[in-house]
Length: 332
Image 1 (tube, one colour):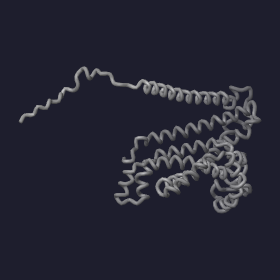
Image 2 (cartoon, one colour):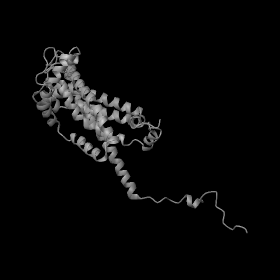
Image 3 (cartoon, one colour):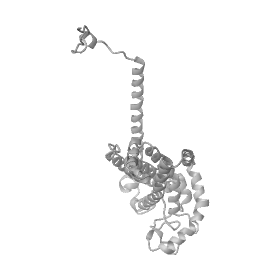
Image 4 (cartoon, one colour):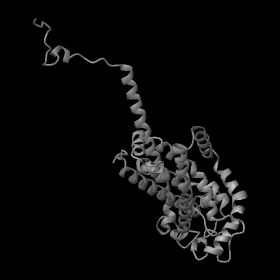
C-alpha cells in the first residue's frame, strides 16, 4: 500500500508568504516611542542639573581657592589659606563616615542574612518592617536622640577607652576626655544607625535573588548552611554589597542636621573621645552659612565643592568595583 500524503516543501515559504507584512499594534509602537522620549529627557535633565550644580560650585568657590586672582582680598577670613581651613573639615567628615561604615556594615549584612536565610517568615517580615521604618525617621530626630540620650550614655565608654587604650591616638583623651559625650565618635554611631536601613534593605534584596539551584546544589553536596552561604550567596551578592555600602557612605558623607546637633565643632584632633576638636563639612556649612556673606560665603561653598568631589570619587570607585563583577553569574 503506497502512501499518498503530500510531501512537505523543503524550500521554505513561497515569495508571497515572505513578503506578507507582519501585524503590528500601532498603539504599542506609539507608547514605546513616548516612553523612550521620556526616558531620554529624564537622563538629559539629570545631566543638566549636575552640570549646573558643578558650575555654580566652581564659580562661587574660585574666590576662596585663589583669592589673589579672583577676589580683591589676599586671603580668606578663616585661615591663612583655603587648604589650611578645609583639610580639618575633610578629615572629620571622612573619620565620622568611616566609623559609621565600620559599625553599620557588619550589622546590616548580618541582619539582611538573618532575614533572608535564617529567620522564620513571620519574624523576617517583622524585622524587615522595623528596619525599613528606621529609614523614615527624620535626621533631626536622630540628632536629638544622639545629643540628649546617646551622648551621655557613651561617656563612661570614652573614659574607659582613654584609660586603657589611650596609647592609640584615636582614643587618647590627653586629660581632656569629654564629659558631655558630644564627640566625633558619637556622631559616627548616630550615622551608623541612620545608614543601617540602606545597607540592610539592599543586601536583603540581593541575598534573596541568589539562584535557588546553586543553594540546593551546595546543600546536596554536604555543605552546611553557613558553608552554602559562603560558597553561593556571598559571591553572587558581592557587587550588591559593595553598592549598598557605597550608597550608605554617600548618605553618611552628606548628613548635616544629625551631625550638627551632636557634634561640638572645633579644630582637628585624631582623638575621637574629646569634645570641641572636630567638625565635618556639612556641619560647618549648616552652622555658618545663614550668617555668611562675601568671602566667608565663598569659603563655605568651596568646602561644599570639596565634599562634592569626595562624593563623586566614592561613587566612581563603587561603580568601578561593581562593573568588575557585573558578569558574575554565581556559577563561576
